[in-house]
Length: 150
Image (cartoon, rainbow, N blue to C red; front, side, top):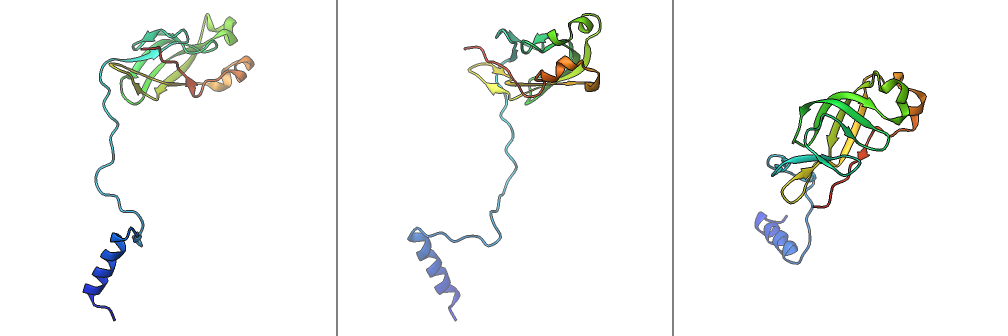
């Protein structure tokens, strides 16, 4: 039987020679989880034309997705949320009089030099079943937003 001293010496020798000894219970992590870094400076969303907007009341996200009458609940954090109206060329006849209720969520906050931009948008119609058939081919989830050249 090996003494505790000999086991310690053998363990130190294995480590000194570059060997690894695995922890039988797996990886042990200690300490608090990492928090997202704070954004320094103003936060923007770029519309389809690349125009930087701060908490806009309306925005054209793509050629086919327009949000209006936005009322922001969150802005400037990892995600931003607003409720408003959804429209686009796929609903010309109805949207001019009564656009669809929707929620807009922005995510993918990316820090630029002295400002930050949201990189993704998701639009969730309140009643998706009420959208016209022409909306079937419109992308409402994971919309990529551009970032203007700084």
